[in-house]
Image (cartoon, rainbow, N blue to C red; front, side, top):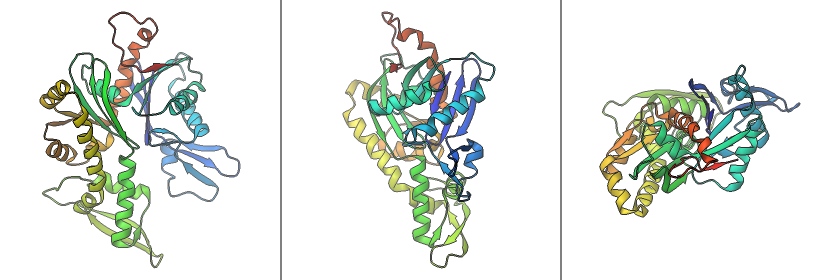
Length: 336
């Protein structure tokens, strides 16, 4: 079994069945009794629409666990959903951002092992994303993968099943939503919620000028009068809201490329860069990075599922991590 613990979505992959669960990483809690009321899609639909009694929490922030108890409960609930009739105590591969501390790794391991998992192996997200995108990373050949998720953007140059150089930056899908909220407040004096910002991003989000400008109606509350108000925003305005964040991601990519060994750089330059993660689907992301980094950029098929599928493919290496057989290159980074 493999788990992609994402800031915005949690996916579970079962060997032989593919991705069997894809739910938002959201938990709704009753404030008075501290009991969990809902998880996943049910809790996600409550964001911004709760009463005083219910609080909606995101147990993961920036790709790492921010609320241990809720994360543990959520993982347990999802694993129960998936393994009603399967083997108890499965062995699990979990994906983690590439620049996380030992303490953060430990938190992930403890949260997952609380649901009765007997063995946990960690895989770094860029490695899983490359495997999921169908790249053979066991060759002595450089591959550049940029995974733009919900909480973090992870990028790495991979070769021989490992990371040659990597970077992780906490600017991704959620930061884009925040940027849209701030922009609309500043320009229209209109307060909108995260759900509305995300809907606008999905409907007309772009990071490169479009020929046909599309519009989307956002509804919220006027910041001055407190009365209901709406505004029609265009894709060009969303571009204006997101461009600063996107440029920061591109600067980190450029800085990482400057430090990449020249031989690997040659491979990367001829093959191009692979974009994965849900936010990679924003219109024009590939064109903009291609223009700034002066190299071809390819978006993987089903980019939002690459990390989960790659972690699933890596389950076959669990046995090799114990019997370090000579000549077996293992993409898994650690076992607990």
